[in-house]
Length: 293
Image (tube, rainbow, N blue to C red):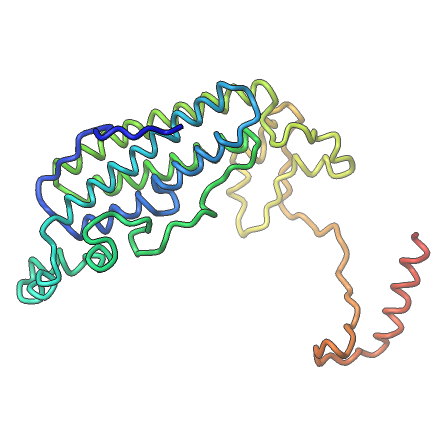
């Protein structure tokens, strides 16, 4: 059950309208790493959680808080749009200073939402459900949550320096503080889950089950120009789970075969002619496959 309370989590009062800033703030509302994404991500992880109750409870707590953050941003955007009208857009062309502000306004704030927030990013692209991750694996999901909060806080910090409006900055400072805590929270959950199940996801498929491929789980393949990548712990250190030491391969060679594909049936209209000896190669390939079986 969800219950709506009329008061916002934190106070929202801007110093002055700024339609251009309202458009920019849409990114942290309905963008890939905006509040709508983390809200839906945490809630769906919580709805579907089959693990310990404390994880479900935490996910529902923070997902519900994010609903409040979406509402806060909608209130912030609405205040920044106060007083805007179609006539203002026309008037903007006469005054360069006004044009600089209203000229950067998202026209959908006038046409679609009637001076309110939208479930879109700063370019008007609609929010997409494919942004969220809810895999059912707690460690995988918590790592995704840390990534989402990292990117979200980064974007709010950038917006903070794009305005001098102290009212807006006050809202951003509260969001930055909460996003900092959320990073702490996910790091604590990740640490707890790693201690319980190990650092590799999924823990239910251990390295030994990789059989002949297991050794490749410790190799760093240098596949770009230069060898600077050899200087990192990822190339010369030890695996975090104690599986062994990393091996740096400066010039790795292919270990597979060159693929040879059959000439398709002519009814597929690939316009391909069988090369010299092509039919014989195909027959031999099929014969070899039969022998191996």
